[in-house]
Image 1 (cartoon, rainbow, N blue to C red):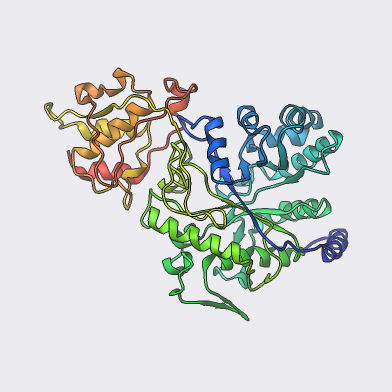
Image 2 (cartoon, helix red, strand yellow):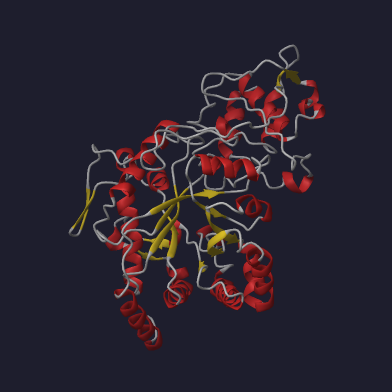
Length: 483
């Protein structure tokens, strides 16, 4: 139960929101992540953004090389502060001031920075409560630092919230509320956001709703007109997006903030790593989403109060993203890791298709495959070792390379390791079971990739290898192979 002071604050802030003009249209941007072993050079990514008329990006950090590449363009940027810095910024205003000076002040004359995202989904259930004590304090100190730097009129401080910040016995908006363990901190955060007229950043994931909930049909998640509508009180929902959006609206209303602006910080559909994570489904979902946004039709609970912004998850695939939630986490990109469009999409109203990255530089056209002239009895064990330090998510059930026969699946694992390690000859050893070839072993939709030539490419050290998590499904895949 909120205290009388909190209730008074909520009432005052709600009355303030009542005088606010609701956004008449939703602007669309993309998330640009950096969890890639061989990232596309920032300058090349900026060219990709400009070629596709994408003028808003959300970063998960404040990489100076990225900001320098964006410098002088019309691209509007949201920079991020990782969870690892929350404790320091909560404890020290000076630390917050130093961060703002180093990451914002030096770029504000040439880069339009719109938001600072404090933390990266710090309420995520898997984090427990470890970041709760520092979150609002860190945001408050960052805001003070922004104010001191005379940037408060142009830069807003926000806090991205994960989809699992909510809880309900059903997935209907009327039954939803914030999780009990986040309630106290969430109320403090909402008061902070309201006081400074900042929006509520939240992840919405129709894919996860479908993937984890048997009550959600694929048609409902993909905006298909054949989907069976769902009713909640006096509201009828024809797609998962509207249902998910109004879940957020309902939770905010129950907390005392019925008119708070919403920014959808992450939404998308992966193209690999799980059943129904395909380019075809991603295209259907994204086209449905863009059509919905461009129609300017709201949701049952907010027919005229649209989200101010929507950020697509994501621009590019990232082979170092955590796969704790599933192998699909490395395949959210509307472009492949090398900037090639996966499907057609009218990202900007009136456009016909996406434009690929140009003049991409790759490592030589070489691959590492299983040597069929050797005894491959222990090849599966070697493949598991390779996958523990590379990306084999395309081999998981339902993925593009799942149907590879043996030993082609062994070759995929070997090649992934070989490419991640910059094609060094010794990285295709595998006890003599590996063979370097110039013949592309790709099969139909299963691409044996060649990595990018980047200045940041280097041998993967032990600390890097510790970042990789081997999917249980990949382990099972090779174990059942029986060789």
